[in-house]
Length: 86
Length: 274
Image (cartoon, rainbow over all chains, first blue to last red; front, top):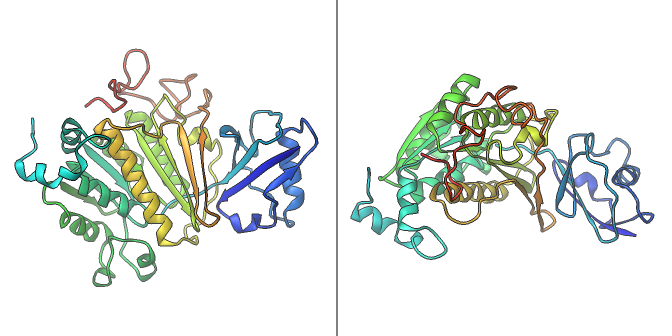
């Protein structure tokens, strides 16, 4: 199945190498998707544990601490790296 | 009870009508106080939006003196103001925009005690601070005082808005159980700062004037670099040490402005009761 991927916020240039769509096994979990993303990024560029995680508009927590979730084909996985102002 | 003078009615004529503000909403703005913590790249445009819209009192808090690198985004600054204290310089610029409003300046970043005291004077708080410690301080003050919080954040050409309705929607601590590290100096382009600041100001106007649908409980991300945006529905954490329902009177944010049922006394339109 395919999951659309959006990574935004602090350090978004590091995610340039990621595809717009992530191909995963059917019924893949959020954790498996996050592992796949970490494997596609350059070494040392894994998403921060404080990144917010949402699937198809629903916030599930952070990369470090989130609700378990089974992904479906066509879901949008959004990671928002922490940002501040100024 | 202050009413709108004929001069004020003329000033605000373009923003009173269907789909914008009602005459009563405009009067609500006049009676309201907004606190803006940091009036720089985002807080500056937010302050301009609120002052021009006619919010009765705008309090800006910002320490330090204006420096050259500020001028790629801090619209309240100018070449002439370089080296001057930001807060009062910015306040003078804001006062020049609208003689019908009062602008107060605080020339430093408030500590916990002062943030709470300022929050108690405000009807809405705009957090536009460049670090998580300060943003969390404002979040605590907002939750404790029962005052809505609009939090604007940015990095590079991206940004986000979160609007908190204390103890009813997720607060910043719900989102970040562990405070993220964040560098004081980070890349940013003024265009995204101004866009986010203006949108933060607009959210505050909607809350104060009881109009439209504030983004309560949602996070709006704007990725201008890639031309993408999304709105996320936020999950409130019942165990949140700041606003969690499992510790409604304790934790980081003991509440004093709550109603008997433990909820913030908002009126029927979603604005804070005055």
